[in-house]
Length: 327
Image (tube, rainbow, N blue to C red; front, side):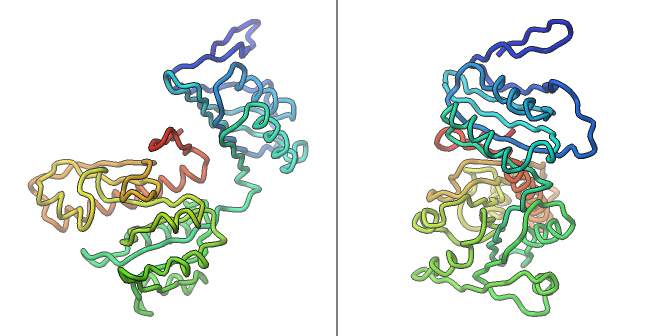
């Protein structure tokens, strides 16, 4: 893609394949109206000339203004990915008309994936959280962090329920929190011969995606296919290292100097889904197992929360078989 400036006006002339780029584009004009509302558009389609130009034309024709646009075209691949933030006046450009206009763009460019959200107008994503009880320190750190993040408005989601294969006593901080906020808690004990996946599916039918907040059970391919939506997991380690049970102790015993957390999509392959987010922190010989685990748990909370926020903000697109584009 290249630009030509004439009379201080930035003109989009064409598009060509190149590695990752991030551009800040001015809109055709600035609307200072107090009704200005944020919209987000994510796009994946075959790469051809003129995609950004058409997107800009669509938004400008309705009085909108592009605030930022990120574009990625993989090297030697004819695939186009983009994420655009724009502001508009919902009185001039209704929510239904936004969907209609972007649907025309999707059809024009044979989009593989297209999504648009208006956070101020659209309902929040509905999620269910699956969580087991931790073997070390017996803490629900990821679950608690998500619950308090939701309460404080730091997570743009509505929690429909919490599901666990462990029963929690009625006087714990988790159960008291859930009762206080009217969030159902479902205890579904599982065995190797009965994963109770049909019951799980009934509980999560009305959700947009699932979050595994240290849920220590494997979801089968049949469950994932039947659910048909995304499932986000957190793994306390830098995949593919230290898979399976008790990875923190595995890493501690191995004497690692750098620990991490990985948030990824769930697939049939254990801890093998496309990675959304990773975070790291240094450890040393001065750490004991407790301080090691606490550092790991802090990373897990941050990493999972960031992955959920990125997903809700349309920053995450699947790339090839086992990768992601995260804008």
